[in-house]
Picture 1 (cartoon, rainbow, N blue to C red):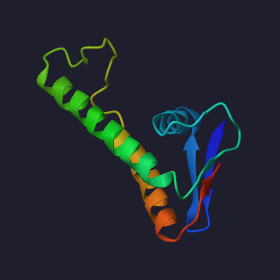
Picture 2: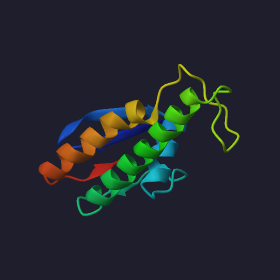
Picture 3: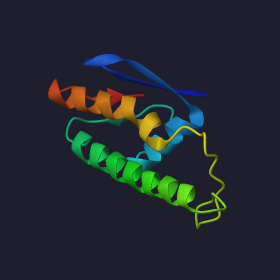
Picture 4: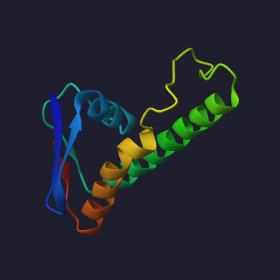
Length: 108
């Protein structure tokens, strides 16, 4: 399954299911709904939640590179060449910012 995010302010953004689910969970939306909306009023909180999650993911990755074993403390395996949350969330954060600037909701 794919998530297709739409806004009148930007081009469509397509994410694979695992990435879309993660982003939706971070912003407090249900990834199980096939359709949803992030209203203009909800966008600042969504951006803040994503930026907080990105910083936390960056910290885990930094700790993993310092650790001889390369694994975070919570037991998850972290491939060193994997795509970070920062990279995956950047297009969505940009979509949210541009949508807020033009007063448009984001739907999927």
